[in-house]
Image (cartoon, rainbow, N blue to C red; front, side):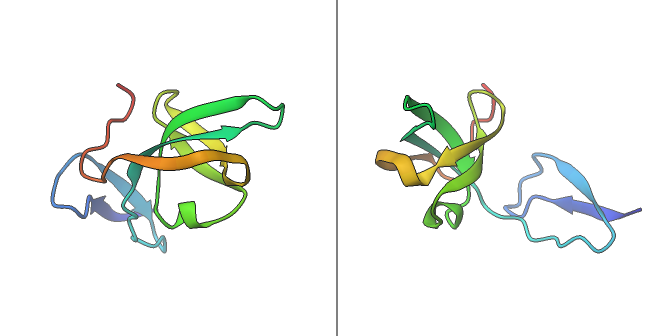
Amino acid sequence: MVENMVFNTDGHTRGWWTRPRGMKTNITQLSEYVGTFTKSMGEARTMRFTTSEASLKKCGLITVYDVEKCGLRKFNLSTLIGRIAMVSDAHALSFCR
């Protein structure tokens, strides 16, 4: 059952979604990054993705939103090549151009 609507916390009305009763309303700010890692088959994969800053502090596989493929993907922080670079902050994201 839907209890109410939740709007973006940055003051912009880019969209809305409904939340089920009992669901937390914490909205995490996401930024856009570019990083390269080694896939399990040994090939390098460069990905432009969005995630929270807290996720980047973890180790191993994290779930990210691939901006170029418009879907959720896994990014392997354990096999990171070089550094992860921030492309844009949370107020200028470019989903699925």
